[in-house]
Image (cartoon, rainbow, N blue to C red; front, top):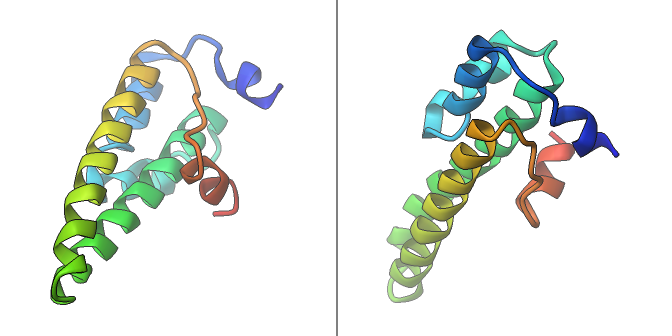
Length: 107
């Protein structure tokens, strides 16, 4: 029900802010600037979780062996979810990612 409410038509500035959510550290900009807009806040929270996952993945490179494997998996997963997030914004939807969406709702 909440996702249906967020799927309404958004203005161009709202969509641009939501798009920024899926470009790494830039996800903090919409989270800070548009806290009142539920649509932007939804995408920004997911983007912040993806960015945090990417940062953790970089630090796992310090772990010999499994660190490199985790980094490669995480890089692919974060890139794929970011692309899906951008497509979701362009379509004016609010699709909750598996696992990441649950963590984002607690943010």
